[in-house]
Each structure stands twice: as C-alpha cells, then as structure tokens.
Length: 405
Image 1 (spheres, helix red, strand yellow):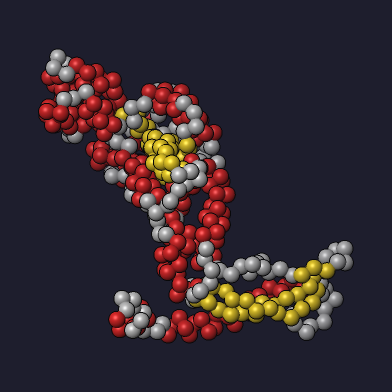
Image 2 (tube, rainbow, N blue to C red):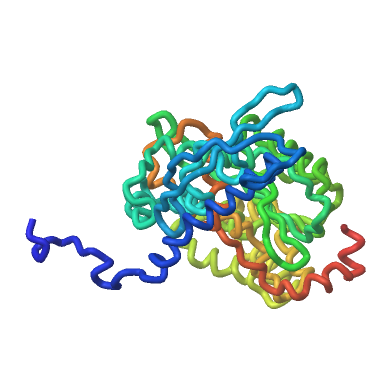
C-alpha cells in the first residue's frame, strides 16, 4: 500500500530518531559484558589469564544472546565457565545476574504485567512495547507465566504481619464481582477489609472469597486479622449484614461501629413507594448530613415521628441500625464524610469491573482475587487519604473514644 495513503503513521517520523537512546544502547552490551565478566571472575576466584592457587574453575568461551531492556534489543556475548565443586566434579557456571533463559530485563516484565492489569489486551501490549522488544515473541503463555509469579506474592501478602502498623479505622464490606468463570457469568462474593493507618493512608488488609455462610466467613477474616497482629481499631465501618456485625463484636467486644449510611438508605428505599421516595430521602439526609450529633438526633426523631404510621417498615429499617448510624458524629467534623460509608471499598469493585471487560473468562474465583491483588500492587488502584486525616492524633488522644477502644 502506498505509504502516503496508509492510515498508519510511523511515530518515528513524527518525533524523529531517539539519538540519546541509540547512543546509550551501543554501550549497553559492553557494560553488561563487563558485569558478567566480573561475576565470573568472582565465581572462579581468578581474573582472566591470572595464575592463582585459589582458582576454582576456568573460562570456556562465550555464547551470543539478545537481551531486551528499556533501551531495546542488545546483542551480547555471555561468558561461559566451568566450576569445580567440593567433590572434584565440574559443572557449568550459571550467572545469577543473567539466568540461563533470561531474555527480558525485570523492568520489561514489570511493564508487561502492569499493562495486563490495567486492562490492556495482548495485541495492544505487544504494540506498546514493540519499540523495546522488536519482534521478540510475547505470547499469551509468556504473560500467563509472568502473572502467575504474582500468585506466590499473593499468598505471602495474605499472611503478612500486621503488628508493625497501627490501624485507626477499619472498613468491612462484601463486594459481589461479576465475571465469566468457565464461560458462565457468575457472581463472585469477595470479603474486603480496608484499614486506615495513623497517617490517614488506606491499606487493603484482606480479600477473601466467600466459601461458606457469610457470618462464618467474616468471623474467619476478622480472626485472621487478629492472628496476624492487627491492633484493635477505634472504629469499624460496616454494611448492615447481621452476621458481619456479630463477627465484629465477637472479635472486638464493645468496639465502636458505624453502619454505612448509603447501605441503610438502600434498605429504606426497598420499603418506600416510588412517589414519596424523594421526600423520604431528603428527610433521611437531614439525619446523616447534619452539622453535629444533636442536630442529627433531632432529625432522627423527626423522621420517626413523621413516618411511623405512614411507612412503618421504613421506620423499622431505620431503627434497626440504632445509634450506630450516628457513630461518626463522635469523631472530628472533618472526617464525617470519610467515616459514614464503606464507599472507599467501592473503588475496588469499579476497577475490577473495568478490568474484566477485556478478559474473555476467568478460570476460577481465585483468579478474581488475583486480578484484584494485581490491580493493587501494579498501582492501578491508589487510595487517597481520608478527609481530615490530620485530626487522627486528636482521635487517638480522646479520653471518650479511648474508653470504647
């Protein structure tokens, strides 16, 4: 096809040759060779051509290899050697810096995995890194192997020590993630624990699939946090599930609990006729968006009196949460918005849904956890500090709150 008529444009024609990278690339091979030569010298305990009583082996030529790095493809000569062991047997020397089958640097592998977890499909990944790896094969199996390495880190992450950090607040919520598992769309319930450190930053502490009854599953998650050394938080923010609430009480008796105000509004909506929902919602917001606890309490009583005869089920749903709907008012005003809902966990759900749109299917529920974990460690999901985090020292010193902690 005539190049001028083609829709494709060579980006190099727009930006010109990268003379800096080209100049560096010409020296990369020489630098790698020096590094490998030095490593081999240390292994055989002698430099090239030197006579030494401590010599433990000898050089044995070299072999050609292409290495793909951030500077593109570089052809190098990898030195070879023979090393003697304590039994007098010789074996071929293997570089620890550049293992036998290593063709890409770790930075390239990390870039590939990050692109994968960002939702980029295989074709686009290949196109994105083509300037670096050229025509080097980058198949689905290669990416699968790279992603599978994360599985080992996932197991370590699940069991990591939590005793070295102090967590002030803890969000708990179950997210129902939809994904294709074995060619069928299934709902994958994942229980998520999100902690807030003393500097206001958030950290995912646990993500577990719900393999049994929800109450038992939550108790297992919370007992796992305690077993890993997590401190007793000063506030736990939860949805309205009774099993979760009981698990929290069993793990940390008499702890302060905030019921998610968004979940409660959804519950109320189920019992509200469509034609009056806007009024009910506005009255409810007077409770959860008040300036202080006294104003919220007054709005709460007004709501009950207004609807107890007209919409008794709505009032019953509101009263089911009790005072735990207003716990956040006991904390600094600047933190109200952050502490009254489990919305921070919603970010995981949104990012997961965006990510799995590019995935034809997931082989198992564990794969869903893997993707969530990959989204976190690859930087696709970044949590902001809670609002008013500067007030956390004040919370920790509060005598009233200490009594409940």
